Image (cartoon, rainbow, N blue to C red; front, side, top):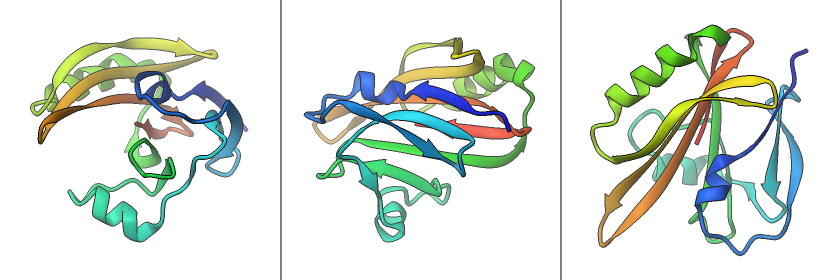
Length: 144
């Protein structure tokens, strides 16, 4: 079983008063990630309200006030590890609603990830988004 480990980049970009992170096993042990100890799974009802566009992730870890989230899922798209440049190009094309801050293919603990960081303006402020995508069991692993 291939076991990925990564520090969620979203936590590096998002201000939070969270305690030290702890390693959590996700997706039936196929992924482990450092997550603030006080982050809890978001309810399916709240996921549906916060992600109404029809492509809601199956899993979201969230802060107590639900302002900082780590969404993750395995999408039914066939992706090989050597396709991260193509994944990144596709992500860039789809980014029509935000301002790109950085992007690239990065090796995280030996695994290639397509990583993109961008800002989206909402109301009177900005939301920083960090997306990391890779291949997991031949399917698309998406973390944001």
